[in-house]
Image 1 (cartoon, rainbow, N blue to C red):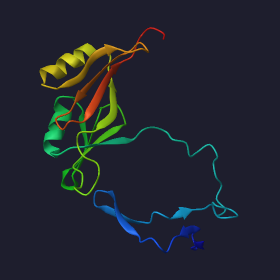
Image 2 (spheres, rainbow, N blue to C red):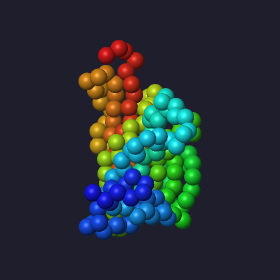
Image 3 (tube, helix red, strand yellow):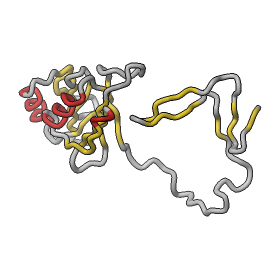
Length: 178
């Protein structure tokens, strides 16, 4: 086992490959690099707060699209999301709910990537009136796969498509105990 001075295990047989980390930023990556905790004081004499290091919230989710301008128009228009950060030149635009910190990144994937529009995003928006949102989106021409239905756990849920075939959901939680 080969170890470098930083405590990484290196595999000299497999080549390093360049991977896209984020728009405009590439990293060199090897599928066999592993990090091991060095023996001794891993913080180099600094104190370490054991209460830190927990996941705090979901920061962003990515949704692949074919046409960034059309996607921004639809997500800000039909869904009413706000424009958070516009990096159109990098094929990357962040939208989100005004009072929330979660961002939805609309991006045009690199043709070499496996991520393509037409995926189940897993994104479900909460609402206080699913029937009003459903009616408004239908009026906007949005296609629903599942119309608002009562779920076994008591809430109402519906599933619809964005213009690129990506699945999104809306949900109204039950006010009654389940």
